[in-house]
Image 1 (cartoon, rainbow, N blue to C red):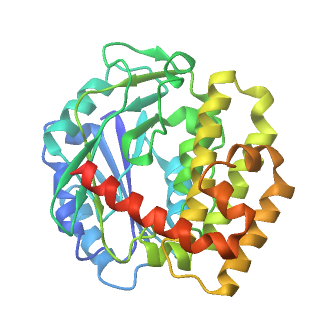
Image 2 (cartoon, helix red, strand yellow; image 1 turned 180 degrees about the vertical axis):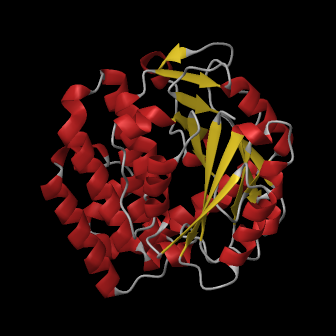
Length: 335
């Protein structure tokens, strides 16, 4: 039977989560129109055995791929090459979906021709068990040209996106492997080829946040800060190599995402206690950014980063205090 949607499930040591994740993708009437590519990325626990159990139970839907560890990006690259569905989506093995909304989405995709499909998603905090719906300000009644939608569209994160598979394959989309934060590249690289976009109303993906092992946790982000730098470099290089082929709305859209990641690099340091050596390290990266890309350096020269750049050693304690106060305020407002 024709596959409408391929969901790639990257799985690294997700044995404890798989029985939460996979059943949510299999409890709907369009299961045979769905392809699940379950990729065991060199797990050291019982993940592979768990995945094979689902393959045995649902051979018309589930395919297990066992590979050496290459990171999240290697799973995306492999999945793009092997997907059979008209559309492709990523759902991590420690997250899950809302079954009834996935069913509705597959039904909608059956008559869809857009290059990019956007839907809201849910952030689920494991610490306080609260949920927050993340939505996008886009007309949900019609298919639009991406350029028309782009001006009011913030970054379409991997949790909210499904791409037309043939577009990804024809565009030779490939992200960095053996590296965290490569999802930023997956959010940016396809945009060059996206002509049309449509948005659906219902959240599909439930994104688990707040675990200490996540790459976005302050401790893990600081540990992996050099990987974050690599991804920023990749995205700047991509923009510089391709901006002449991009419409003005696409340029602006990609520049906003890169600017956000540059600010995040400073935030990674602000979230962690700093030694003199770490401040010097941040200063070195700041100088390198200025040499590497005067444009993106200039666009990121805003308070409080501009204050840090004047005298990082003296300004750091004050800016860190401001940042911590802002985070508390932001969390209160979120609730």
